[in-house]
Image (cartoon, rainbow, N blue to C red; front, side):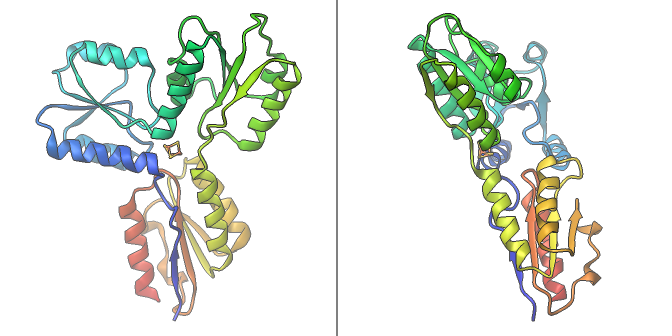
Length: 286
Ligand code: F3S
């Protein structure tokens, strides 16, 4: 008889699981309208389900004036201090689902900014997580976002201040190190805080291991999800019978022989119920 191995790191990371659970708990427990500031996760099915249960997504805080007061849930990416203050000023209760790893970066930036450091954030300037992080520096600190080797080469700070360097949680570690090295070589007094979260790396390493031992490997995730595409590539290299599916219906389960070892992993925004459904159907074949 074949065996099924489901990667432990398949699907939501710790921070996203926590945020999604907070929304569902709020639906059960709160007696007021529930809002999320931006979609809680990049998964249409989940966002639609929450909408059906009465959750409204707010994209711009200025919209709040037109809404009934209620509970505002902050997603795992986090927000700036000014945004927190604004939501409170509108009289909304805040449920903070910012991932604790992101909150830690907010505290670093606030602390070092108060100690009169200038701040460098290594990350993508438009990413909501980076915008949120930026918003924890005081007005006294200059904040520079560096996303590439070229940005690092061009960087200069003539203030004579010390520099505190943090990173977006999902930034590539090797690139982070290269950027830090370039800035260090310019002779600044730097404090480097590596705030990269290893959830993505753990998921990829485990996917590789599971695919290596599998006759058939199934990768579940949205077609447009870049982290799922990456997982697919990694698994395909290890197991030529790797299938990339979005939903259970897309899998041709007749491809699975009763003696096959089957592996399953899933991208960061794939809900558990899809992983469970696929697993159940695979087990029926073994
Ligand atoms: Fe997820 Fe938090 Fe890391 S949201 S990717 S566990 S920083």
